[in-house]
Image (tube, rainbow, N blue to C red; front, side, top):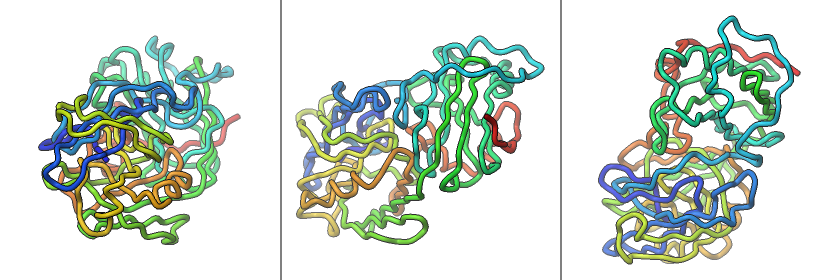
Amino acid sequence: MYTHDAPGRPAAGHPHRPAGRDTHGPAGRRPRRPRSVAAALAAACGLLLAATGCAGTTSSAAAEPTAPAAGGTHRPTAAPSRTAPAVPEPAALAGARVNVGEGATVGVGMPISVTFPHPVPESRRAAVEHWLSVGTEPSVTGAWSWVKDRNLLDGQRVDYRPPAYWKPGTRVTLRVGTQAVRHFTVGRSLTATVDVRGHTMTVEEDGRPSTRIPVTAGRPGLDTWNGTMVVMDKQPKVYMDSRTVGLGDAYHGYYAWAVHVTTSGTYVHQNPNANTYAGRDNVTHGCVGLATDGTAERFYQRVMPGDVIRVTGSKETVEAGNGYGDWNLTWSEWLSHSATGKGGTGHARP
């Protein structure tokens, strides 16, 4: 499979585009970049094909805006009236897009991500935060933080998360000024931990280890990103083309059961090479490969946007703006990128 581009390795597909699977074999074969069918996870079912590549941490990926995370259109629905903050409503909110669809159910790791058509100047960011209201039931402390998205300019993306993962069952309401509103629910907890050195992935559901899966990760020089990632979207089939990431004719074709976890193109997906190497060796171009014996399909059917994918034993840590790498920042680091510099408690609101 391919992964996001990181220093020293080729980049992989983008979250909004469907990416191909990693057809790369053992070390020595050149990685190729996949194409993704996930252009609009929310509105369409991922039938729009865009070139993407399966690559390691050193590759570069094509710029592309972040796709909506969980079922829904890019733009939120009209919001009911609310009490206005003391500062005037920023014009930037009129064109804002939200990553979570109305009425969606997401995993415990899904941040709220709001993007803007143009960069918001630092002098206006506090006002934007004041007009972005998050209500939760039960009450949850959280904070906004400005994230440099790998495909956007500084000031075009602000994310909201609690100090730790959301608790299952939390109901969340987001208000984007007077412009829009989104309601979503946090589902059951699922975390998949990939041990690159041990060639395994352990899946925990609601805190209980339930499955241990043999995997093959990125080969040396095309290492899988280390750190905490979040499922952005998933597609039953993704087209991957190594030429889109500058890797020549190393691979091109469709890969099945593709779970997308970074903007640069990291996926957990079915890979025929896993039939031989899973549990034994790392031979991919940066993605996490699963066998074709039904293992990949079962994992695909089990996960949803917002589920947590942790990679240990690799080298470079994924950046916050490469997909939803928000959890790689400590809470104090998170607050340091907030224009208001503080977290708040979200209370239930209609």
